[in-house]
Image (cartoon, rainbow, N blue to C red; front, side, top):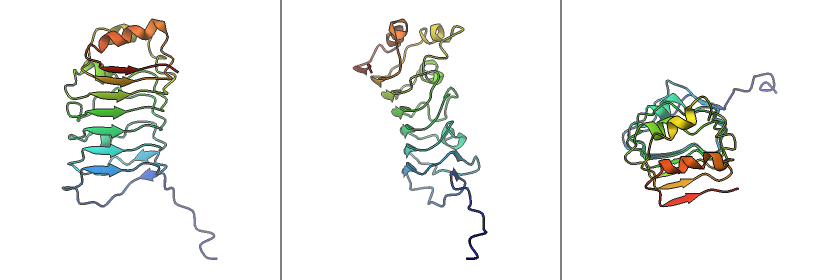
Length: 179
């Protein structure tokens, strides 16, 4: 009865995690209803795989951006609209899943940074992903070439006008498009 009047704490923001930071390389924080990750939180420094799927994130948290050894990032099924800031792991990342978000444009850094290890990217079900293809943004992306070998981008409303983007993927071995 005495607990009835106590406010229920907001549990959708991750502010604390206690781990042995030196040995953890894989972390799964999926399905936790996370809407934000506190900037002071320290994720394991040797983290190589991070799963943040099925949460409520509207941006890629700065603590994720600051990871340096990340090879696999699955941040699908969130509400992310922009991901243009180059993460510190940009030369390490091999697999990136950004599907089922609200991206208004593809992450600029993937084209601009000449990533040497990124092999797979999934941008599927971001049906507004061409919305920022204005004011020369699309044309600028066409000036770059990525080393990505596998891209999945179904349900992205890529009409014929934007199919030129495929020319920026000269090493692509598999491309999955469609509806």
